[in-house]
Image (cartoon, rainbow over all chains, first blue to last red; front, side):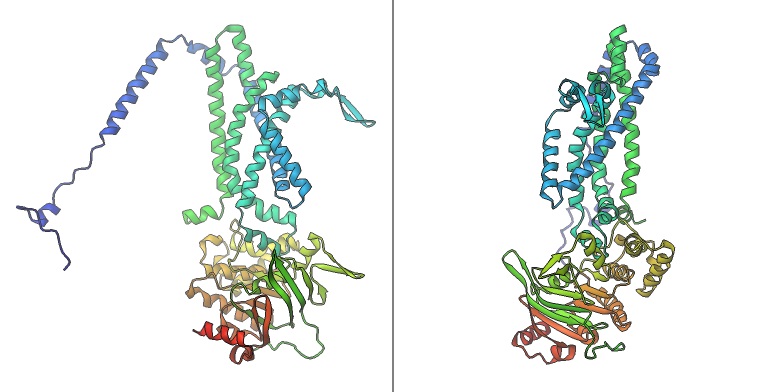
Length: 289
Length: 264
């Protein structure tokens, strides 16, 4: 027998072992809950006494001009992200290429378009006509830049190209996360560079790429609001047009935020399914399916 | 040995390496390595770590580019094309085409984790050789039966033991119908109780007449299965010859020292 602690005076070890257990009390949690409830009540009271006309919120929530703004916001998010992801993949692959020319171009692109503010880039594209009155290939075709550079095109280029610079770094991180043994195994079964990227490397990199890109899609939903500055009629722009007319500023901003939150929630659900798709193998291991 | 390698005089070796040299910076990894492997032969390369044996194997598959010398696979120059007095390095796609004739099994398996076992085995023939998926599927299932893993066809690599993964890796390489199989320390990353199942598959493969080059520490396997054994040290071939001769009666002092160190 190893040494046992002697039972306390007057009680046998058996008696102690059968005593009722009393869990520890978490007083801190109770205090925190009370404080937060009080603050919430105060905020609710302030709202009820405020001069928000909720009827305006209700009225404009489904107004056609707001809904078309929402549609344009989503359209711009999709277009700018597609452009951004396309550019991101291409420049990430260039960035890790053994070819020094491609590598330098990729580094230059990332430096320029990640460095300059998104709003500035939007203004730059929108005002391109000031320095290039016409765009085209001399002798073949030529367009007047003002006709070509609509608010939609300028916003898509501005947002998509700066997004590409961020996504390139995310994709590069994904490429680096794939084990070098995977490259060797792909080469060993005779894959070409392109087959290796498409079948082996990118699908595995996606597992690392999807969460941050999902984050960026959500960021893009909100970033599209910058396009209101160059007269693209997305939801914030349209909300502003209404409140310039009726002065219900806060009410319309609430309408816009409700739709932004709605769009972001939808995208989060989509992200869950995409992550599950690219987690094949890895998730099977974790959940033991 | 069941299948006798055809070593009659005059037959060209499947692998011929002449004065193969490889540097990593200032380190000489391979120093004028010359070696012949005949069709149907099982050649085990042994030696302490850092002796260049894995590097040599990887050069045969062009996973490393050699800095000097030349390697021929079935009398075709590996990785280069000779023209006039110069050797011109092949393009990526030409190198990829050469690699299709050589199967490789890695120490750390390197299965594709996002594909099922069956997809791993089918990937090469379907994507690279563009063979019809239905037929490849039958061949892949047959190979999985052969390595004893028919019931794991739909599992992901992460759900298998190391020994099972390595057997899948062997099936994956075989599905390309290679002329030569390279094994780079195939049992070194395995728990001791899993080594035997992989060696059994390799033994079966050797019996079927496959030409194999095996970098290994398993001297028992080399003794039982290999036709020839090559002992390397510091990037050089110290001793090469029939398995029995090199393993039981080594003549070079370095080989003798290595053998006694391994036997403890």
